[in-house]
Amino acid sequence: MRCVQRLLPIVPLPRGWHDQSLKKGMTTHGHASREAHESAKHTARASGDILVVGGYGVVGRLVAANLASQFPDRVVVAGRNVRRAQEFAESLAHGVRARRFDVNDAAQLADVLAGVGTVMVCVA
Image 1: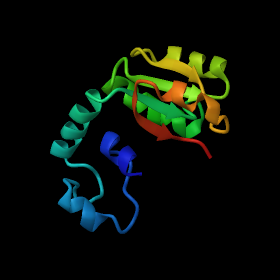
Image 2: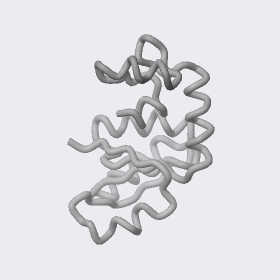
Image 3: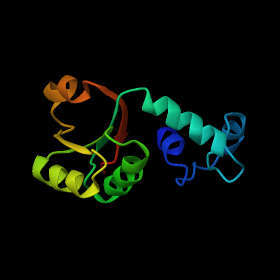
């Protein structure tokens, strides 16, 4: 959840994290302060692709759509059905790419993570 909070300040933190969050640049409402958000965007821009696992599902679509405009040419939508991932990636534009990835197939993990700096897991 912390990764989502740093990249998408619209996602509230879970209860109990507010005390720690205030020390790390979060507001009292559980959202990233503008300074923390800009710092996170700068850090994420310099650290590889953003892989959204389950990126064409209900939650993954929201996450990928929010990230796509903030991090052009960095978002990779991944899931078991590469055709669905490709169709959604093309609909987003901003250089979003698609990749086939099945979380149950450990053999492909190294290939899928090559060049990835952040992984957003959006599978149920």
